[in-house]
Image (tube, rainbow, N blue to C red; front, side, top):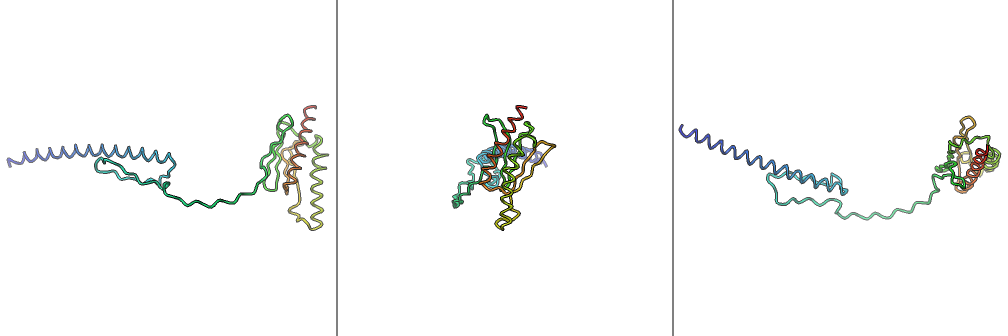
Amino acid sequence: MAQDPEKMKSMIAFKKRLEDQLERLNAEVKEVQATLDTVNTILLEKGFKRGDIKEVPAPASMPKEVVLPKPAAEQPKPVPAPAPAAPAEPETVIPLKTMADEALALMYFDKQTIHVMPDESKNFSVNTPPFSNFLVEKVFAKMQEKDKELVRLGQLTPDKMFSYNIVREGDLIREIIIKNVDEERLKELKSSVRWTFEKMYEKIKGA
């Protein structure tokens, strides 16, 4: 029994050494984990996905060297065949301005439909010349009559016929929607709409 206190003292001392060693190992693990987190952050900032970075398990003791797996981005990748060149498309947004660079309207071209959005600050009215007597009667109406004749002759289907719709708020023009416009007519309409709104703006300013 006289040896029991000595054994207890030895066990307590051994326990203390184990606790000290565990504390040191925990500190080393935290240091390695912090270093690994820093490396992962750098790799992610360079453009690697998290799935490309394999997590390295924390070692029981501080390693002399940490070897990271090669990122997937370093592996050779097959070179894709060049895609065929896309056909040139007409400009989708066309700003319409006066000769003095004053905004008149925006023209949006979507497939075969044109949306003309007049500058709301100008208060363009359907009653201001030459909107009705030129743009509507001599440009829009003539294009529509031409397509009606083609439909009558069976050279054009009704759903492909030129059409337009003027969206109004009272007498003010808020939008012009023009459907079934090909590239040739787009050029003519761009010129005609710009000229019409410029002349209307001159009359509004002079009123």
